[in-house]
Length: 256
Image 1 (tube, rainbow, N blue to C red):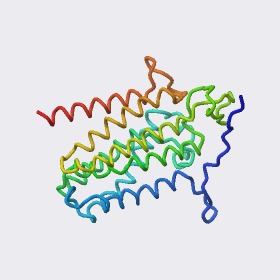
Image 2: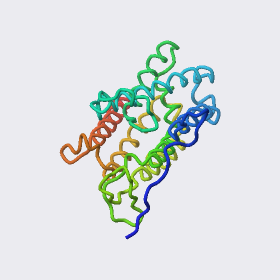
Image 3: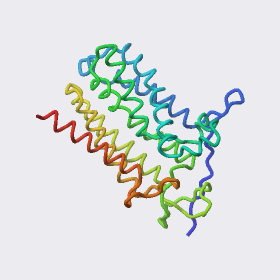
Image 4: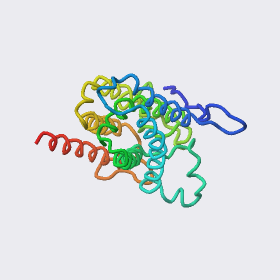
C-alpha cells in the first residue's frame, strides 16, 4: 500500500533572515485568542477586569513556555540537552510538555492571584475555557514538525515520517489529538461557559477531559524512545491518570 510521506517544513517563514517556526505562530495567535475570548464571555460571569486578565496572561504565557520546556528536559530527555544546551532555544525542534506547561501556568496563577487578591479558580476557569482551541493548532504544528508521531499502522491514512529511520507508516496521532484534545474539548469547554459562575468547575472539567482524551490518544502515539513503556503504559498516560485523579478529588471535596 502507498502511504503519504511527510515532507512539511517546520518553518512557516523567515523574518529578517531568522526562521519563524509554526510553533511560534501558534503561540502568538493563541495568546491573542485567549485574550480576545475574554470579550466573548459575559463580564458578569467572571468578575475580573480586562486589564488584570491581560497582565496575568502576558507573564502566564512565558510561564507556560518555561514550565513546558523544563518539564520536558527534566523528565523526558535530560541527557539530550546536557549534551548540547543550545538545543533548549531551538523551539522549532519541539521538546515541550503540556503537563509541564500546566504546572508552570498554575504556579504563576497562584502568585498573581495572591498579589491581586483574585480567585485562583476564577483565573484558571477563564483560561481553560478557551485554551483547547490553542491545543488544536498546537497539535497541528506537531504534525507539521513531523514529531510525536504514532505507533506503526497499516491503515490507509497512516503516514511515513522521515525522522523515523525504519521508514514504516504510523498513525498520525497528532491529528487524533488535535481532534480530541483540541476540537472536541473546545466544544465541551466553550459550551460550559455557563459554569463560570461556579469557581473551579471549568478547571476541573478541563483537567478530567483533557486527561481522558490524552490517555486515549496515547494508545496510538509512539512512546518516547528514551523512556518506552512502564507497565504497558506510556509516561504520558500516568500523568493523565494523575490529572483525572486530581480532578476527581477536587470535585468530590467541593461537594462535601
